[in-house]
Structure formats: C-alpha cells, structure tokens
Image: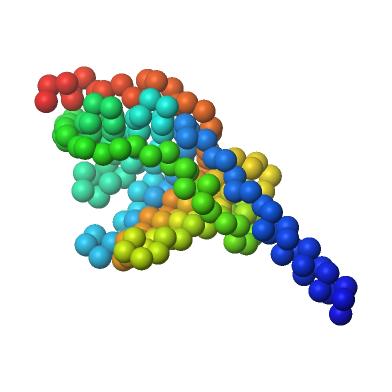
Length: 192
C-alpha cells in the first residue's frame, strides 16, 4: 500500500511540476478550422494561417468558403486597423476598418495546466493536452494538444465560449516569421 501511495504521490508531483509549452507567436500552418455558433451553426474552413505577431499582421487563406463560392484570402493588418477580404474567383475585394488588438495566438498558455495525454486527429501522433479555464462573466475553455515528439508543434486547438466554439486542426506547423510576401495587399484592394 505504501508503494502505491508513493507512486501516486510521485505522479501527482510530476504533473504539478510540468511547465506549459512555449509556442511561437510567428508561424505558418496548414489547418482545418471548425466553427460552431448559435447564429451560423457549424462551419468548416480548410486552409492556411500565417501569423506574424512581431509585425502585427495575420492572413487566413480559406480554400472553400460557402459564402464566396471558393477561396477567400482574409488579410488583417492590425497596425493600420484594416482587414481585406479578397476573393480570387470573382476578382473582388472588400475592405473593412476595424479597431482590434492582436494578441499572440498562444500567450494564454502561461496560465494553462497539464490535463492529460491527447492524440492528433490526422495521424496517430501522441501529445500533451494543456487547458485554461475562465470563470465568472467570461466563462471559457481553451485547450491545446501539443506533440510529445516536437514540443513546439500544436496538433489541435479548441476554444469554447458559451454557445460558440472554434476547433483548429493543425495538419502542418512551421514556427518562425512567415514570408513577408504573404502580407502584400492584392493590387485590386488598393482601389477601395
């Protein structure tokens, strides 16, 4: 009995001592984004994400978007407070002004706690699940499954806030600043 108690205590101590992973704020990834909301129901967007936190800009290339009948490029330039929706199929561009602050995609991990082992959804790769909960009027849950083999490689990410949620599956992940060409505003968008 003492041996079992010692093993349980050791395992408990190991879990408490684990530090959350430090995910890069600049990265490129091939993803599948699944969104759920009371207003829109369930939507699935396969595509690519380019996040350049250092220069406060983000690009999302959605391969198939039901509202636009094909690919859409969403380009957000936070310092200029402008967002472009470029639709190559119809050669259109919609420009939106916005007042938003860019947060590093994984900064919340500093508050996360180790939960359990997890698994990639597109392979049998094993990972560690990190969870952060918010309470009170801002109830939410954030989860990140990080590869055991490649410590800075996310396998999937889940956000829950009330009746809304976003689940992102990372098919590939490359840390480091994306190519600056990814953030060039399409010529057509300069007309607006």
